[in-house]
Length: 271
Image 1 (cartoon, rainbow, N blue to C red):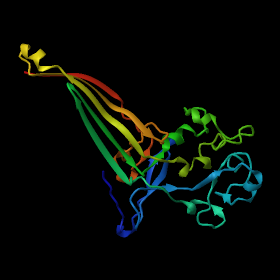
Image 2 (tube, rainbow, N blue to C red):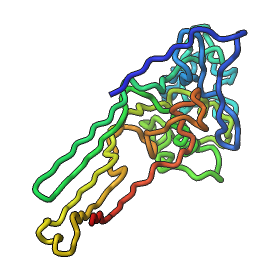
Image 3 (cartoon, rainbow, N blue to C red):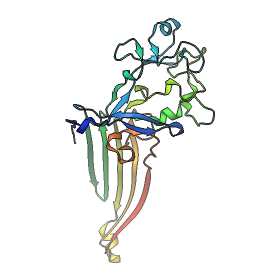
Image 4 (cartoon, rainbow, N blue to C red):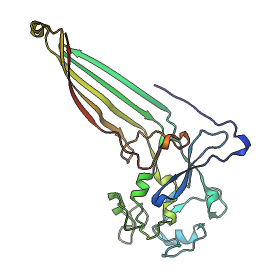
């Protein structure tokens, strides 16, 4: 088991360490911020309070990004994301951005079990992490409901409408710049997981059978890698690492290809 802590003590010359990634249409957006007295690469964006489902609540809420209440493009309507007025100045704007997640795990671990019974042997390797967050930009891209030319996840079908007011997914709107897609805690998920990383089962033929062929050991085995993962993360793979090897972009899932599941059979022969 392993645990680490990190903290930024000082920034030379007040350098700004916000980090961007390209999202839909190669549009760069800020996703992390690194500031003094905090861990590096913290997720950075808006805090949400669900979506607007009641007209009275919408009418009395702080104005979001200068947009009036209405149902058209550039207006805030029922089914739009309700952002929190973090600094309590009576309006929602860029000054309400704050830390919304931590990519650093409380604990990483690995555990190996080796078993043997007569001529059979088995090895099981488990590994995982606990307490880290993941920013699921793959989900963001797959649930935009903002353009007809983008593939969408099946979750995009469950959106808010007059006949589906129980949904917590925003309304469709044909505008890729709508405020529902701002980087927020909507896309931050628990990245904890435990994975059966490797399982190997082998059988060694009895020595009295193989010795007549001048063989000292003959073992048949089968191995499965990345066999099964237990996690609440909704993306393809919770083991994210750092985006483009940038440690200030750790835990950013922007379409990372998942680790493959591999099955191998083999034969060990010793003379």
